[in-house]
Image (cartoon, rainbow, N blue to C red):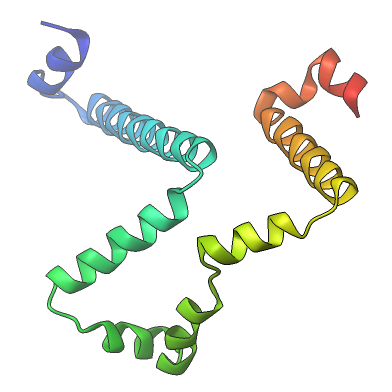
Length: 138
Protein backbone atom coordinates (compact mmCIF):
# COMPACT_ATOMS: atom_id res chain seq x y z
CA UNK A 1 0.00 0.00 0.00
CA UNK A 2 1.19 3.52 -0.64
CA UNK A 3 1.54 6.17 2.06
CA UNK A 4 -1.72 7.88 1.11
CA UNK A 5 -3.67 4.62 1.35
CA UNK A 6 -2.20 3.91 4.78
CA UNK A 7 -3.19 7.38 6.00
CA UNK A 8 -6.76 6.92 4.84
CA UNK A 9 -7.06 3.47 6.44
CA UNK A 10 -5.46 4.44 9.75
CA UNK A 11 -7.89 6.05 12.21
CA UNK A 12 -6.60 8.83 14.47
CA UNK A 13 -6.32 7.67 18.07
CA UNK A 14 -6.37 11.00 19.89
CA UNK A 15 -7.15 14.68 19.41
CA UNK A 16 -3.68 15.70 18.17
CA UNK A 17 -3.56 12.86 15.65
CA UNK A 18 -7.02 13.72 14.39
CA UNK A 19 -6.03 17.37 13.86
CA UNK A 20 -2.85 16.29 12.11
CA UNK A 21 -4.87 13.92 9.95
CA UNK A 22 -7.31 16.71 9.02
CA UNK A 23 -4.42 19.04 8.15
CA UNK A 24 -2.89 16.40 5.90
CA UNK A 25 -6.21 15.89 4.17
CA UNK A 26 -6.56 19.66 3.59
CA UNK A 27 -3.00 19.84 2.24
CA UNK A 28 -3.76 16.97 -0.14
CA UNK A 29 -6.95 18.68 -1.33
CA UNK A 30 -5.03 21.90 -1.91
CA UNK A 31 -2.32 20.04 -3.79
CA UNK A 32 -4.90 18.40 -6.06
CA UNK A 33 -6.67 21.71 -6.69
CA UNK A 34 -3.35 23.42 -7.44
CA UNK A 35 -2.34 20.69 -9.89
CA UNK A 36 -5.67 20.99 -11.69
CA UNK A 37 -5.33 24.78 -11.85
CA UNK A 38 -1.77 24.54 -13.21
CA UNK A 39 -2.96 22.19 -15.95
CA UNK A 40 -5.83 24.54 -16.78
CA UNK A 41 -3.44 27.51 -16.89
CA UNK A 42 -1.10 25.61 -19.21
CA UNK A 43 -3.99 24.92 -21.57
CA UNK A 44 -5.06 28.56 -21.39
CA UNK A 45 -1.58 29.82 -22.36
CA UNK A 46 -0.77 27.26 -25.04
CA UNK A 47 -4.09 26.84 -26.85
CA UNK A 48 -4.86 29.83 -29.10
CA UNK A 49 -8.55 28.87 -29.27
CA UNK A 50 -8.95 28.24 -25.55
CA UNK A 51 -11.45 31.05 -24.98
CA UNK A 52 -13.62 29.90 -27.87
CA UNK A 53 -13.62 26.33 -26.56
CA UNK A 54 -14.40 27.47 -23.02
CA UNK A 55 -17.31 29.64 -24.20
CA UNK A 56 -18.66 26.79 -26.31
CA UNK A 57 -18.38 24.40 -23.36
CA UNK A 58 -20.24 26.82 -21.05
CA UNK A 59 -22.91 27.30 -23.70
CA UNK A 60 -23.36 23.54 -24.10
CA UNK A 61 -23.59 23.12 -20.32
CA UNK A 62 -26.30 25.79 -20.13
CA UNK A 63 -28.21 24.14 -22.96
CA UNK A 64 -27.95 20.73 -21.30
CA UNK A 65 -29.19 22.25 -18.02
CA UNK A 66 -32.35 23.33 -19.82
CA UNK A 67 -31.70 27.08 -19.88
CA UNK A 68 -32.47 28.98 -23.02
CA UNK A 69 -29.64 31.06 -24.47
CA UNK A 70 -31.71 34.23 -23.99
CA UNK A 71 -32.16 33.39 -20.28
CA UNK A 72 -28.41 33.23 -19.75
CA UNK A 73 -27.98 36.63 -21.42
CA UNK A 74 -30.52 38.24 -19.13
CA UNK A 75 -28.83 36.75 -16.06
CA UNK A 76 -25.48 38.27 -17.00
CA UNK A 77 -27.04 41.64 -17.78
CA UNK A 78 -26.21 41.58 -21.48
CA UNK A 79 -28.78 42.46 -24.07
CA UNK A 80 -29.67 40.03 -26.81
CA UNK A 81 -29.27 42.83 -29.38
CA UNK A 82 -25.54 43.10 -28.64
CA UNK A 83 -25.17 39.35 -29.00
CA UNK A 84 -26.98 39.31 -32.35
CA UNK A 85 -24.75 42.04 -33.77
CA UNK A 86 -21.53 40.21 -32.80
CA UNK A 87 -21.50 37.76 -35.75
CA UNK A 88 -21.95 40.67 -38.16
CA UNK A 89 -18.75 42.27 -36.81
CA UNK A 90 -16.66 39.17 -37.50
CA UNK A 91 -14.84 39.33 -40.81
CA UNK A 92 -15.06 36.55 -43.33
CA UNK A 93 -12.08 34.97 -45.00
CA UNK A 94 -12.80 36.95 -48.19
CA UNK A 95 -12.62 40.22 -46.25
CA UNK A 96 -9.32 39.13 -44.70
CA UNK A 97 -7.88 38.20 -48.09
CA UNK A 98 -8.94 41.55 -49.55
CA UNK A 99 -7.27 43.36 -46.63
CA UNK A 100 -4.07 41.38 -47.14
CA UNK A 101 -4.03 42.15 -50.86
CA UNK A 102 -4.38 45.88 -50.23
CA UNK A 103 -1.66 45.86 -47.55
CA UNK A 104 1.73 47.36 -48.38
CA UNK A 105 5.00 45.54 -47.79
CA UNK A 106 5.89 47.93 -44.95
CA UNK A 107 2.59 47.29 -43.20
CA UNK A 108 3.05 43.55 -43.57
CA UNK A 109 6.59 43.77 -42.18
CA UNK A 110 5.39 45.81 -39.16
CA UNK A 111 2.60 43.31 -38.50
CA UNK A 112 5.06 40.40 -38.72
CA UNK A 113 7.50 42.12 -36.35
CA UNK A 114 4.68 42.87 -33.91
CA UNK A 115 3.58 39.23 -33.98
CA UNK A 116 7.18 38.12 -33.43
CA UNK A 117 7.57 40.45 -30.43
CA UNK A 118 4.31 39.18 -29.00
CA UNK A 119 5.45 35.58 -29.43
CA UNK A 120 8.77 36.38 -27.74
CA UNK A 121 6.97 38.03 -24.82
CA UNK A 122 4.58 35.10 -24.46
CA UNK A 123 7.50 32.67 -24.29
CA UNK A 124 8.77 34.52 -21.21
CA UNK A 125 6.35 33.99 -18.37
CA UNK A 126 6.50 32.43 -14.92
CA UNK A 127 9.95 31.69 -13.57
CA UNK A 128 11.47 32.13 -17.02
CA UNK A 129 11.05 35.88 -16.50
CA UNK A 130 13.90 35.82 -13.96
CA UNK A 131 16.51 34.14 -16.12
CA UNK A 132 19.60 35.96 -17.35
CA UNK A 133 18.41 35.74 -20.95
CA UNK A 134 15.06 37.35 -20.09
CA UNK A 135 16.72 40.24 -18.27
CA UNK A 136 19.06 40.68 -21.26
CA UNK A 137 16.05 40.88 -23.61
CA UNK A 138 14.35 43.49 -21.43
